[in-house]
Length: 89
Image 1 (cartoon, helix red, strand yellow):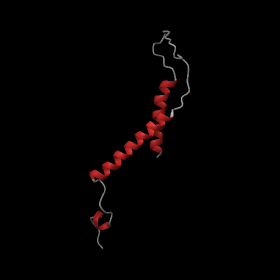
Image 2: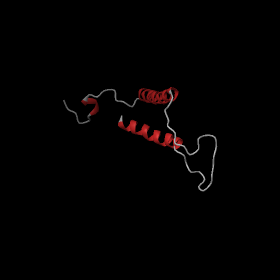
Image 3: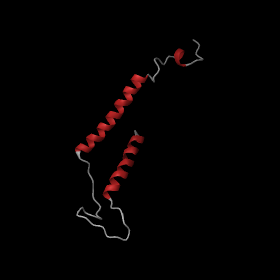
Image 4: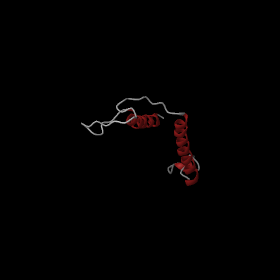
């Protein structure tokens, strides 16, 4: 769970940091527009963005569960006689 949390935090820092903090695209030049150039903004994701993220996680988990069920990765039994080749009763 901590790895997943760390991945989401890293993604948040990369994406939101790149959008919220101004970049110097042309050093020494004055570039301006009507979109708050050079101003650091706050960001709060909307409900749709949160649901989109949760939906992506749900789809990834669904694909993993279906993959494990269909591709037969898991053993049929965990009995010692099946799993351990050196088992003797």
